[in-house]
Length: 426
Image 1 (cartoon, one colour):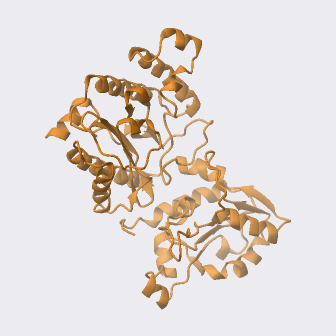
Image 2 (cartoon, one colour; image 1 turned 90 degrees about the vertical axis):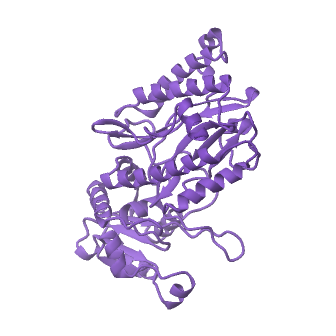
Image 3 (cartoon, one colour; image 1 turned 180 degrees about the horizontal axis):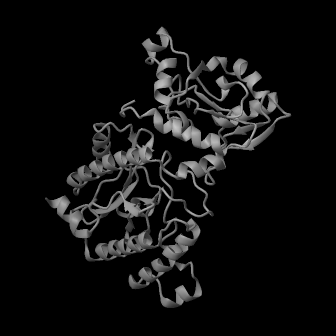
């Protein structure tokens, strides 16, 4: 891995928190992501299943973490299965972790090889009443493709049909929303690298460059700072492409007079930054571009003022949308009558959420309709999109709701019109 080693204390703490929340007599079993086939004999780059990393820090395929706090045999209260390393693997793919290295990374003492899983787990499961399975319960996840924990759940249900099966995801979501100090530091590192990429883009963008060249500048800066790369497919959208919310083609030429929307983040140690800024391709906002940009900036400032611990995301978003209606009225995009007739008139120009949780996943785990807990990290990213004018503006910062109040990790990033213009022209 490119990133610096992480103290096993973080993962020991995380397992302890989960163990304390498990129902009595339950065993929790979590599988790493599968290696995903690409074409021929090739695979996509491996990315660890977030909960497995959260609990162990082990960042390789063929890993299973097991927690059974009530197990009568103390050797099986927490244990892990990892891919067996050997000389052939070392020559072709690089050596995998040895049992001692697994202990150093995770703090888990009892380490088995992955191929020993079924023969080892059988007698242990028979001592449990409940099996906690870890399915993907992200409410925006819809896929026909199976995945490792779904596969494992089917296997377990077939082998142990008399056991009670319970959901692990709601418990882990509660835990992962509330970040530990070590996680905050890793997020800050990812955000700092994101900042470096943004500054490099500001110096590079000018009329005539291609969007993919801007993308290349950013990824160069990321990797040279020990990032694995982009936290998600970057959006480098100039002109009317900025009105396409998930534009990732990044294949157009940047034209004089266009506004460019940049939405990207660096991944560091599986934690993610997420930044959006809009910049003028020629280094100078037009009068209308400045009006729209400043309107979105006003909405973001309002959102920062109302985002609090204890609120729900829908209630908070509703407040932001009411304020957005006012800004759209000022911009001449909506009339008072349209707003009076339809409280959701804003959706013509602002059609996405204001915030999402951030952590090991860019759209991190959350309970959408429950109060936001202390030590959550969220984005704040309002936008206004005007296809008929070829202007799309979104402004996004990452914030931490600490016990001392909101801390904006991007507070010193260029965000004012004048700051962006000065950076581009200096």
